[in-house]
Image 1 (tube, rainbow, N blue to C red):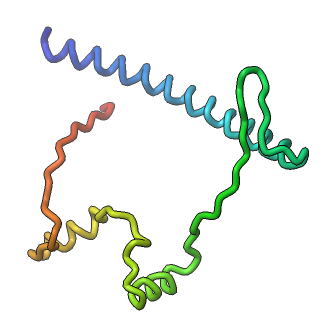
Image 2: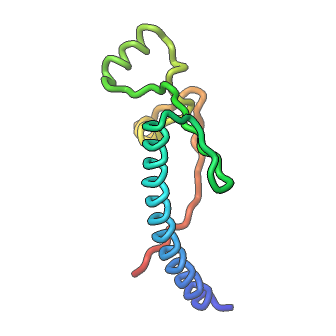
Image 3: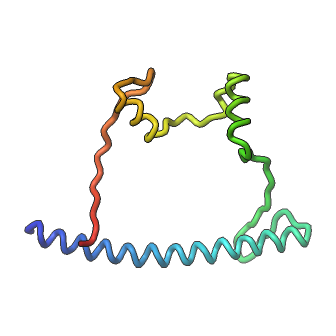
Length: 121
């Protein structure tokens, strides 16, 4: 096959995927609304779990962090030295700034990730 034919097939597949993704997003949105309804119904009925139509729904609670003051949080981390509060990833944008300035980051190496961008023209 010539590349032009392959590109045409690719274009058609891309359009089909876009339609399917839109449908999937709508269905996921509906599911989220239904889950919110189930949660509220279970809460108001005092139920922590229910089994209906072969599905088991379990309502759980857990306390999770939500940073409301980044300055205070950062200061706490600096003072306590507790870096375990952060995830183990490096911000790409900041790393690029450091590398572009000619500096290095100890323990971090540059890795080139290849990707292909395709857009309609």
